[in-house]
Each structure stands twice: as structure tokens, then as C-alpha cells.
Image 1 (cartoon, rainbow, N blue to C red):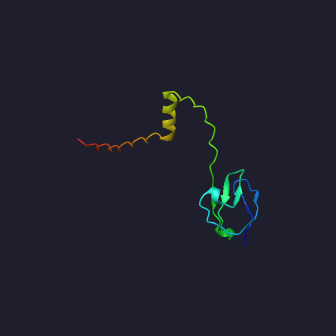
Image 2 (cartoon, rainbow, N blue to C red; image 1 turned 30 degrees about the vertical axis):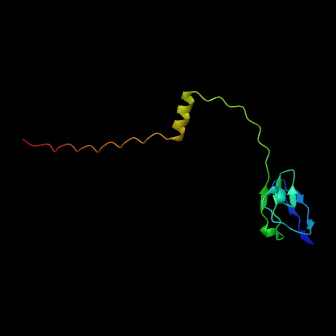
Image 3 (cartoon, one colour; image 1 turned 180 degrees about the horizontal axis):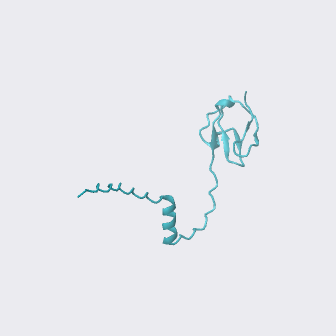
Length: 105
């Protein structure tokens, strides 16, 4: 008989109890895991060594569809674009030529 040690669920932190089994099949999907958190739909692979356990995520409930937000007017989009792209730097003015020396007559 093989005993898989208890683990903590990475989702909610509750304990996944230890499991005793005659055979320990490899777990490649949530349904194959002998240790599971049904609340979070997270299973622990059937590795005996806790350091080698991989967590397998089952089917997560689909998030509720959110109402589409109204798109901002073009002016607001332009403002957001300006905030994202800083204004270009002013080109430096060319050095002024020194005045020509005064010629004596």
C-alpha cells in the first residue's frame, strides 16, 4: 500500500488529505489526481515526494460575462495616446554665428 502525503492547496491553502492507494497511476489531468481540492478544482499529481508534486488545474468556472464598456470618444482616445507617447523634444536651435568683426575705415 502506498501513502501519498497530505498537501496544501495552492489556491485556498486548505489541506488536501493524505491518500492510501494500492496502485498510484500517473496523473496527467485533474480527474486522475488522487489528492484534490474540489473547491478550487486543483489536483496534486500522484508523486510520493512533495518536492516533485505538480499541481494540475481542472476546469475553472467561466467568468461571468461583463457588460461591454462604452468606448471613449475620439478626444479621450487622443488624450490617452498623447499620455502614452510623450511629446517630441524641441530641436535645439543652431548656434548663432558671432557678429563679424568691425572693420576700421
